[in-house]
Image (cartoon, rainbow, N blue to C red; front, top):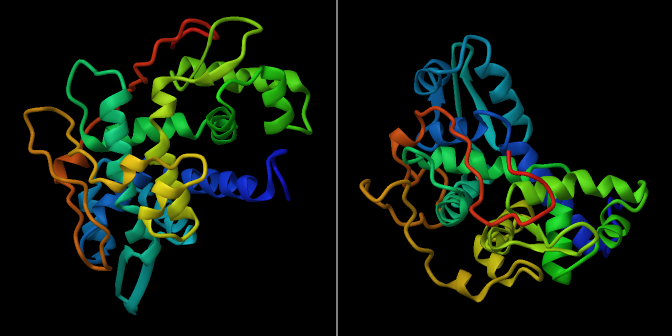
Length: 279
């Protein structure tokens, strides 16, 4: 069933990306996926890697990731059970450094360098706002759009004024921009820069190779064909290159220190001349 007034292919694309974000954005999910990036682990081994989770928190997270098709539970014997990535989970890992690359360019710098995992979590939170994906798609496609026109496209079955809370949130987050009340909305520089991220999420959610992101009809960018710049969370730490596509069982280029840190809120650096205050 259509969720927007966009063409069916576009509507389905947005729905897939929205569903993908809903799988990986919940708290700790990305960290659990990274902790499982090596050989399959027993529950106790995984719990030791994500020791900040309290008793009882890990099991429901693992079940949700298994239900999403990202993690596989293998029962070797009644007393020997392991958890590891599915092929779909393996295919997701190269998307995460693409998110870090965007965050390094467009998120405000915190008082301390942010580990890569925090960059990912902050970025995913921005993209998972209600109606965010659909609004970003329309703004990218049409350059400038009034709030009323956006409402007719993004939420055709709702009162048109309902578009303004998510729009104001995108402006506050620095992903959209406007010159004032009654003026059209457009993507900010940070919103425009989301092309590689949303293109990669679209390709992954459709089961396509990530190099198809460069050919996305809305978010495709010629520069996606080139090797992305190395991603870092501070100039002083080594900068591993974006990992290539992997086969099941191979290890990604993530450092253990990326997994263990407290969350710190960051915001895109784009200026917000109007449309809502920064939080």
